[in-house]
Image 1 (cartoon, helix red, strand yellow):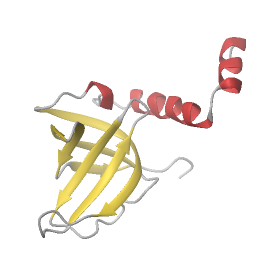
Image 2 (cartoon, rainbow, N blue to C red; image 1 turned 30 degrees about the horizontal axis):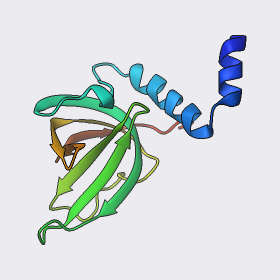
Image 3 (cartoon, one colour; image 1 turned 180 degrees about the vertical axis):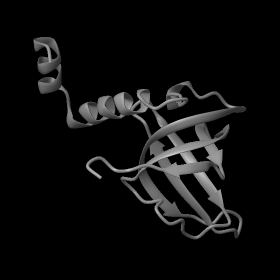
Image 4 (tube, rainbow, N blue to C red; image 1 turned 90 degrees about the vertical axis):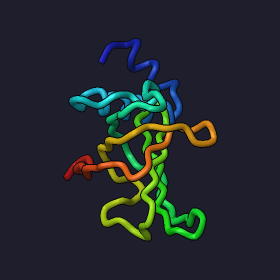
Length: 122
């Protein structure tokens, strides 16, 4: 690590350090894009960590909603008709693929294909 990197890390907030680590991890993933570069109305693949997972009914239909974060931005994941999904929990690393759309100004993928990834240290 260079002196410049050490100084930047010493002055950066924990959130900035975490974001940089997520960007580095996501950049090493083959075939995935940074969330910040995903365009609406296109198929996309991304990887990151789930920051939140909630059960939120939509128009009477049970729905699991999660926020994937890769250090460059957030992607909302919505599984319709589900109350829970084994392994989908905050802090879990995941790779997703699906049609990206924009809902209320946020990148969103409905019913994405997903692959759970090992947690650091596993």
